[in-house]
Image 1 (cartoon, rainbow, N blue to C red):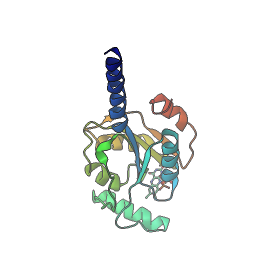
Image 2 (image 1 turned 60 degrees about the vertical axis):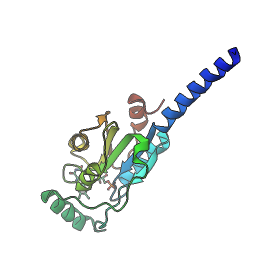
Image 3 (image 1 turned 45 degrees about the horizontal axis):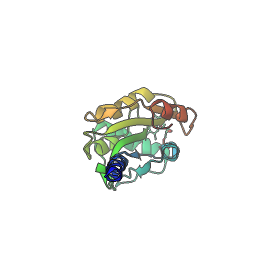
Image 4 (image 1 turned 90 degrees about the vertical axis):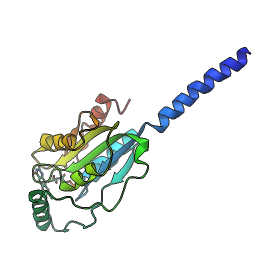
Length: 178
Ligand SMILES: Cc1cc2nc3c(=O)[nH]c(=O)nc-3n(C[C@H](O)[C@H](O)[C@H](O)COP(=O)(O)O)c2cc1C
């Protein structure tokens, strides 16, 4: 009898751990034009054991830098929602979602609006990150927060180009890393 009770208690605990594990997956979703944000996203995923999702536009941006800046500017001015080619599988299994992007024209690229509007963020925790050359880091992190009003948010991080310095400390601070 005593053994039966102990076995039941142990399986209850293990069951609980299992349920927790199923619902505590972490996703790093990112858009990257020239690879910097991808580099940082991969670094975060490696450190935290998260899954990666690269946001891919249906219509690729011009390979040349200046034409790309022009397309990006036109999209911003038109408040456009550039279509996304791929979709996150098993969205419900993630409870924490990093969202990352480069700073484009002082804010997040419009494709981040498309991404944020494509999923239900209720009950999720969103952690913004961005890469940038010089300016508008805080505005871009704030934009990602603004675009996901249903989510809870943790402190974000901005990296200059693909500099990963400070990321480990940040992940520890927000308790995504022990
Ligand atoms: C269209 C466009 C607009 C940009 N606007 C800014 C900006 O406002 N501020 C800034 O610091 N960097 C700006 N940059 C530089 C990028 O944010 C930076 O190089 C970033 O790390 C690129 O990330 P990626 O390689 O993942 O695309 C811009 C780059 C592009 C292509």
